[in-house]
Amino acid sequence: MRNVAIVGAGKIGSTIADMLVDSGDYRVIVFDRAPERLAELNRRDGVEGVMIDIGAPGVLEEALRGQFAVMSAAPFHLTGRIAEAAVAAGVHYLDLTEDVASTRHVKDLARQARTALIPQCGLAPGFITIIANDMAKGFDTLHDVRMRVGALPQFPSNALNYNLTWSTDGVINEYCEPCEAIVNGVAREMPPLEEREEFSIDGILYEAFNTSGGLGTLCETLQGKVRNLNYRTIRYPGHAAIMKALLQDLRLAERRDVLKDILENALPSTLQDVVIVFVTVTGLKKGRLVQETYANKLYGREVGGSFHSAIQVTTAAGITAVLDLLSDGALPGRGLVRQEDITLAAFLGNRFGRAYAMA
Image (tube, rainbow, N blue to C red; front, side, top):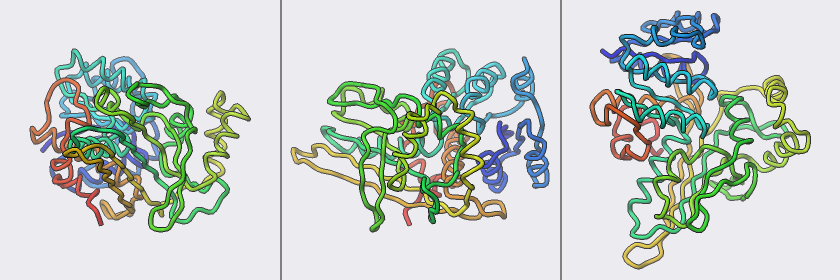
């Protein structure tokens, strides 16, 4: 049985803990600074919740001694601190971040690490990267790779057509930071909330627009191999226009704490959500121009005796599947491991990865 630590006892961290404990193969300890969250976790068999200040020198490093791995389910701005502690303690490290700067720091740390550092193990980046890379491998010549993901309420009921289903800090960050892309063969940074498009799935109209971080390391991997590569977040129509007004016209991009307070006090959370994964790859196969599309809708389900939302399940399934593959020796045990290094067959064949199975 493996000892695993989770930093962050929020919606995603608690779902990860439930999945790992249910498997019967992991002992789980969860670190957080919120006593009410830890009290809830401590009522569950097989999970120990411990309150620590991860910012205090040496505290997290000492707490990680004897663990097989640490999984970061904390806000993106803590990613670097947790990765540093993992390297110092000599334990494997996995995270869910979409923050580009944090991932670059993890990549730098991985050069000297004695253990595996695996960033971006969630939904996007994460599973979206694995599926897009797998599809791209089937082409002789790549033209376009378009990746679209959204976590949306099934029953939108406000002007934003949105409910809080994910980290508020994370959503604001991806709406504000530059977006990596490859355009006509050249790696570029694109502005967020731009290049809006509309499309339909099952008769429902959606919009998609640039957001930061969803490509993971795929820009670097496919540089020189693809003409166009981009990632956009899916929302219901009208969302992007309102967010641009808030962030740009009202300049709340410069006052993110204010915007966070507004969103968390105005938008309710919901467990009735749907995760949409939509990937289109175009290129040449045996001299013919071919387009292939992957489209999937995923919904919430019961884990550990309680119902979890679609974004909780898909995000937690991503990182637990990667942990399982690492534990089984199917992934390198040292240095940086990218999501593209994970085969789709191995991911979907994993007991946790099967949460992404097509309906």
